[in-house]
Image 1 (cartoon, helix red, strand yellow):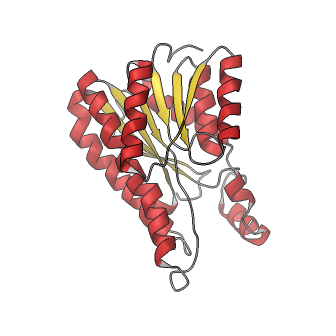
Image 2 (cartoon, rainbow, N blue to C red):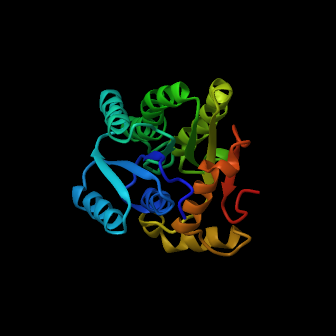
Length: 248
């Protein structure tokens, strides 16, 4: 597939899990893909090598999305390197799950800074490029926790609910410049994060999923690619739930 040939993308938090799968999917469809990582350069380099060995083009940036200046520098570097920024996937996110009575101020701030402020930091600079191009697509990786709320996740649920509001507001701001903005609200996906959940909790959650299984990162990546593609040019301001029916 080469439907994204000649176009470029930024994927935040792209060196592992869902982000990695999206990077691979976009690269396999012909896009030049840049992604950021914070600590593990080895993982990032392995992903770049995998894509390049397959004939694709990828570049990794060590940048913290919570740092406004670092986000700006990354976006500028991608624009200079690739010539355009056609797609942005705001995927970087963390969890620090606790009941609010046990949650520290640091737990709250860390999650909101990464999951919400980080999106602002990268999007502010990337969308400016898209508006000038009069074309672009932004996809924000949200969660059903931001749709229905989850006990023990007041910080995470608040960040993802905020991201959904951000998505809808931005879609109204930039639609006339042919820039689409959508959110993908995920349920339980097989990642390192879900693997660390207690077995009892995972069993309980599986019982509530009508499809009776977790989603895979490859499934998420294919939905993400569709929402960025030309086939979805008339979809904007929407929250698409990929959750096996968990939050319906």
